[in-house]
Length: 65
Image 1 (tube, rainbow, N blue to C red):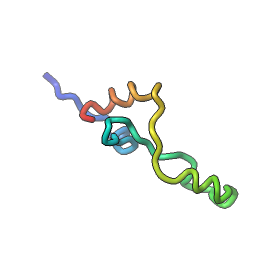
Image 2 (cartoon, one colour):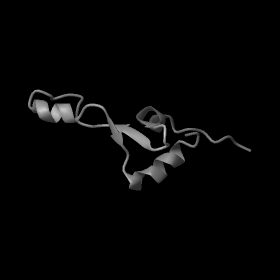
Image 3 (cartoon, rainbow, N blue to C red):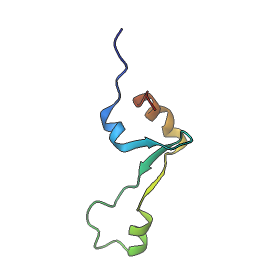
């Protein structure tokens, strides 16, 4: 039987919390930051939880989480 492989692109973008929920990075913080306000740049820091509608497809790509 073939082994179940992890989707490597998804593994670099998503991680699991201690309770098993999925965590993602926030977008729009890479470049063109001069026109963005400090408040919006602050709100883009850190992680947030993945939306519930996307969890099933991401968990299919990451079988070992």
